[in-house]
Image 1 (cartoon, rainbow, N blue to C red):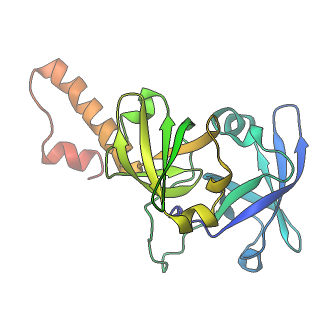
Image 2: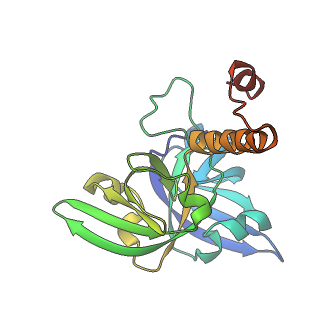
Image 3: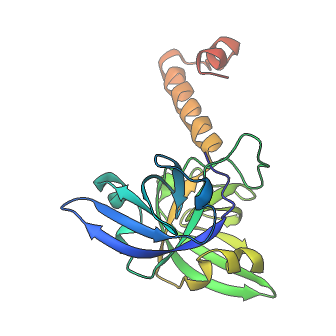
Length: 218
């Protein structure tokens, strides 16, 4: 698990492409002294496993399923990526719980400045938008952000200067794709409601009671 609070931006140093996979070598300036082979590092919001360690670099393997659902396929040598090591139980949870399992892609449709804030509009599919609410949390390329607006086609987030400076957001432009992970609690709640609605259709009455909640882990 991660928090969505980016520790640093890394730089893609090597890209080795297989027939349906990619191996990335990423330069990082801090944090690797506590990193071991097999550790998880969120890379642009994607939970990836460290398979090689260098003095200032680490390498990860990216399988076909990850390439299909994320923007990693668009990276090139020199691209900057957001990095966060896995959460320690003793850490402060400054953002929100982020699994590193990307739900899908969004496309930046507009960027405007509002005094010191950078307002970014992102279009995405309704299958993701149904889990996004105003004042709720969203992970964009691994960055924990608060939603300030949402409709049936897009949503908006407001970026403070510190977040923009310490992530790869300053380099983003209209038309760029971003990895999106919706709030995990919203996804569980959505599945629970779907299950309840199907039972309602069969019985004609609601089945949400204490037994139902206990059966589903609540």
